[in-house]
Image 1 (cartoon, rainbow, N blue to C red):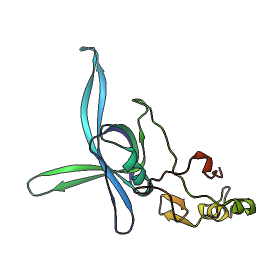
Image 2 (cartoon, helix red, strand yellow; image 1 turned 90 degrees about the horizontal axis):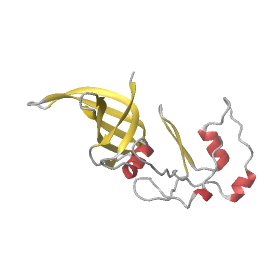
Image 3 (cartoon, rainbow, N blue to C red; image 1 turned 90 degrees about the vertical axis):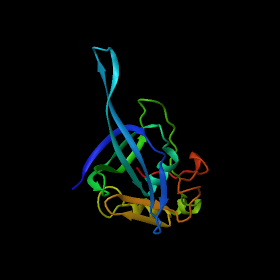
Image 4 (spheres, rainbow, N blue to C red; image 1 turned 135 degrees about the horizontal axis):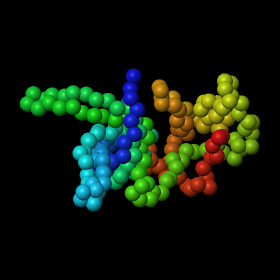
Length: 191
């Protein structure tokens, strides 16, 4: 069992990105989270103690975090918390790691502009010949059913995470954080 936590704080280190030999994208960074409170005797806001977390992201969230999150920015993170004790012989301590499910900028402190990931959609002939998708179980089609109807080449399913639909060959730069031709060329979602 894992506990879900939501944190706000400041990105304290530049995000580090890597891709494993199996092709798994990973991005991690440290997050400093402090509580502020208003001290009536001093009549000003004062910082409380700072808690430090290691945030780790995987797959598409890792690719997006690598290009979107910068040191010094205020963000919101939701994910599974793991607390572990460590020792290196002369020092010992406790590490609090968060395996992030979602990362975003804290809009209480500024503004942001969102860019959706683009995937290659069906050709015009595929759109014309596609019949409405009917789900085999439940109200909405599965990712595989929708991908087949949309003419998408592959569907990746991650245990406990959901599905990501891909086209096999994507446009983009870096670790999968591509830029497409624009919003006019994005396929519509079925929902």
